[in-house]
Length: 341
Image 1 (cartoon, rainbow, N blue to C red):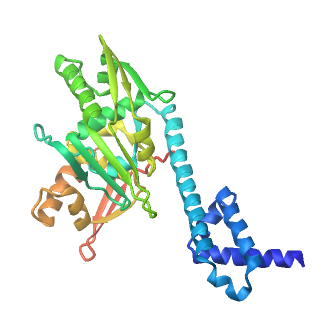
Image 2 (tube, rainbow, N blue to C red):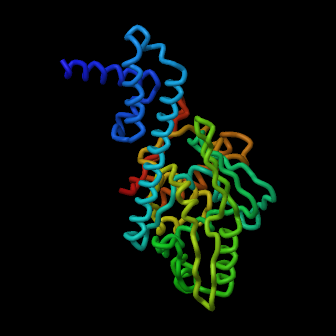
């Protein structure tokens, strides 16, 4: 008899969670302490009301159940974020010489914009950054715009990262060698300017929550650095990396990146590196994100094939591109993405 009653209660409890849209979240992590409290309150109310009135639970109980459900959801998001950040920390210690890692969010948002020499913008006030596939995120930037050369420098910085304190230690020679630079006075000047930019440029990331309790973080990629002679110590921003972890991390092939002289091709190489092959899109969607300086889709697509797809094919990254004229769907086949595991 007790077994029958237990099974009946469990069925009612699952139906209630399903009606609230919490069933999938509960099944993923049923041992979460928040669910035990929801179960306790549900059981207590069942003892007080009849089966007929079950669907008319008091407003007070419903509110408490919703609060516990939101709490469980936030705990689950925190667990996922911490897991992704742990994957990053573990992967840093086993990077090969030709690989680096970066958050997918970097490639899905125009944080490092392809620019021509002398065309870097400066934003005195907060400027919204376009983001693909993350409706719950708002990213803003102010001060000096970062470009694809800055992204390459940041990818090299990560290779010097000590995950214990999130600092990077290196000499001018070590860093510029990894950047495939000659170590001239001009290169040293670029290194100093690069560190000033990633330390000065500010980002504001807001993660919108359904309950209105948004999470917000403001900071730079490298809050401070110290230099003594040819030696550098650069502090990276662990909190900002935590916010980057709302999405996954991917490996990127630096040797391929160095073969690309066009910043536009470098940016699309990074974007495809965050996806699994094959990747599908349309010319219209590509135009909306990558072709803001073009008057039409036709002109954009012509240049995109010449300046982006052709170089990526020449270095052996893209193996095939197929455009279906009837549906406008473009299929990209390329080297398989390396996923952090």
